[in-house]
Length: 235
Image (cartoon, rainbow, N blue to C red):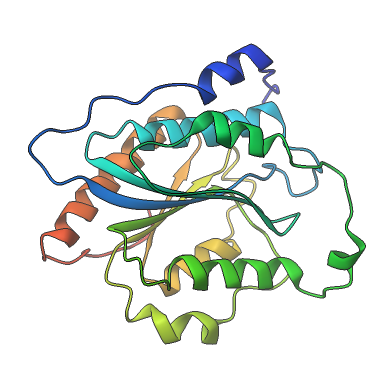
């Protein structure tokens, strides 16, 4: 597939896009979104414009869902093992602030401290999941989004299972994967989400995002109304 080039002007338009009118007469759903702003290819040091566009497009679709009324957002980069941006309990995603934070990613920069850690990326991901999913704020759903995270070690089961049974809201993973046939294996985030009895959606085209959000809304509403999240088999 030919790499797409996105102008800075277009990216600015995406980051400053507004949100649609919220649904009237219904309690807004409170969701937490954790986005891994990382390259599609694990061999790439830089976040390409096409990667940024795909992730921002997913966030835009989520932010424009009428039934979503409260957003907590955690943008992170697994390669750098750091949280880039955090927004808590807002009525809309602050795309301009997110855009500025993403610009702070340092492609190709190597932190010697991180190189000394044998499984640093796995430890970072494990701590992030425990903090954001196992916290006491109890959103109506947690959504992971990003490219496949093919780490050298999976998140340990014993780190997730102690609090997994207490997670009484749906957990989802929207996996951005341009070439699912080339990389069909489950990644570290996918395995962790499975331990949390979550559902996974693979996104390769814009219509996949629409389907994923529609299905997530249905499951979140069912869960909130006391019918349970239902079967969370991977899509």
